Image (cartoon, rainbow, N blue to C red; front, side, top):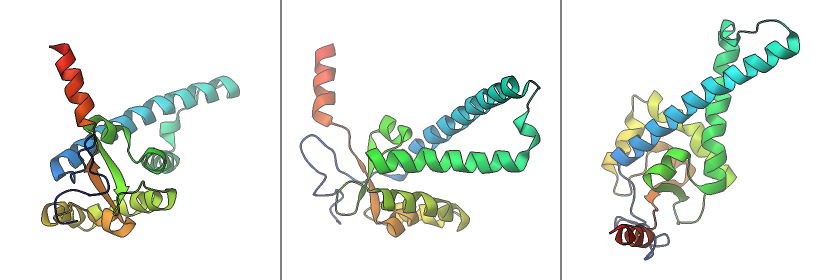
Amino acid sequence: MNTGYLASVHSPGLQGHYAGIVTRFGTFVVDLLIIAIGFAIGGRVVEFVLSVLLRKEVDLSDSSFIGIVAFVIWAFTYFAYPLATAGRTFGMAVLGVRAVRVDGTDLDTRHAVLRVLVFPLSFLLLGFGFVLILLRRDRRALHDLVAGSCVVYSWDARAARLRFLLKR
């Protein structure tokens, strides 16, 4: 584990090295944008459908508590479902990383949900949960430690090189 990459994930086609803080922050920013855009569009669609069904104007922004609860549920689902099924969110896929268990196996539902539930704790501890990414060799944040997961680069380097050569 101290060699900078996960041996069971490392292969000629996968990078397998632990993802650093800049890449992980980039994935988070992409995910936040997708969450915000998806929630805004989804909210408008729900308002439109309710307005048609109820035959009166519906504005969900009038109910801030329901909006906050809906946003939290949307964000939780956005993170937990793709992590449990594919080991990566959209932002992670864009930047070529995936979350795996410490032994290199795929994340299961229990570990993915636990990782998402503990994630806010890294913020609540004044960001110390994320400082661990800088301090630890295996680049694991607090939520990774609790969930028994880590984030590794997982793009197919050989396929990317072949695509680049074909363009020349």
